[in-house]
Image (cartoon, rainbow, N blue to C red):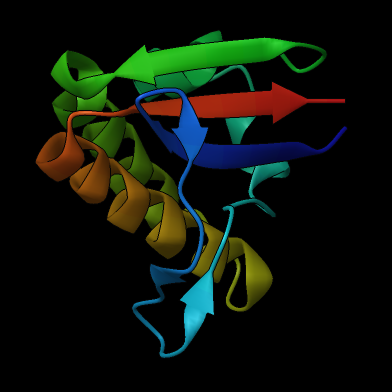
Amino acid sequence: MSIQVELRVAGERVRRLPDPAGGSFDAAGDFDRLVFNGNPALGLLGQIDPHGETRFGTSQMQQLVAGVELLLTLAKTGAEHRGLIRLRSMAERCVEQRGELVFIGD
């Protein structure tokens, strides 16, 4: 299973987001193992459809960030950790731009 997360504002995908590690990125991912471990403490992240789309709006970002913070304590160094940092950055931007995060499963 693979999940990609996009930030959309007014229905349009936002590209070239500033990466906290430097450079830019278009989507977050690489944290699938953590999201599907059956942990009820994940809140919204535990509700992601692994085979379809799941959308979360601005009002849900605080809860989503809480789930990301929990997962950061469990993440492996490298791509998994970087993907979660990007997801947290996208959630913050989502609030600023009044958008939505779209989780796209395969």
